Length: 327
Image 1 (cartoon, rainbow, N blue to C red):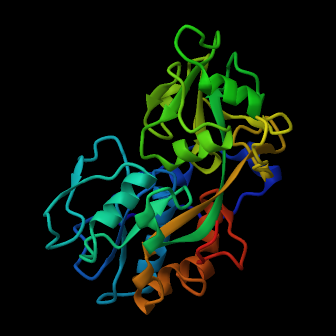
Image 2 (tube, rainbow, N blue to C red):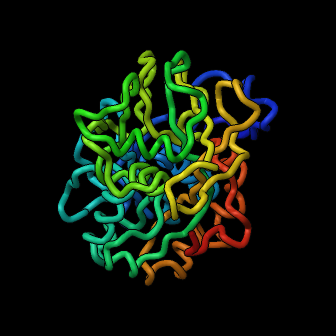
């Protein structure tokens, strides 16, 4: 597995000095097929870099033959579409789950085989009744906003109501000079963003793209796409923008936090949609030492993992929430 990238936390005032790609944008599958007893995860694109860094930290502190943590990315250029998730897995290879819902579904479909032990998720419990048998253990917070090119025709501040209008329109009535993109089905970012602007599905003016793919907006002055602040940090040509939630669809609850910092230094801070990020485990596994020592309130992630989380530009979960099944 790759080594942990830089650990220094970045303060709000230092945003303009951040240069280069974020650690959270690195791509790294496990370096070899995980062992049968390893704790293996799949799922969210949003947290794939963060969970990989946390796995590296945990594994460095726990020598073999203890169970290590292994995390398979959702997507990455050049990565194979099928993966051997664990030695002696059945089937021998799986289609790589691309996104939160895809990872959760793979975990559910695995039953009690433990070829897959956890799923990364950037959304809360969904409508599938089977998800009630799993614990969504919050371990960090993430800001979600809309991204544009650094030179863009799209205003640097949009209201929730305006985003609802852009993403609800259908062919023949599209918004002039705005090209909206949305992540693929199964993406937790897609689900959370649409819910945050008061929609369950996008209109036909919206184009589907890979989650957190900056190429769809970088260099295009009319493009707009949902983007994690942590994943967008330091990406050249990408601008993360401010959301004004004072104007939103009737009945839609407020869902903003104003303390995320954009990577481009153009604003002191930006208002974004606030969400928890989770590692999803079986109810029957959650309190077992093997899993609790990694994911639980007193486990590695919620204690020794704090510096890794902030170095990846995510925010820490509240102490009473970390490692707990709480939204």
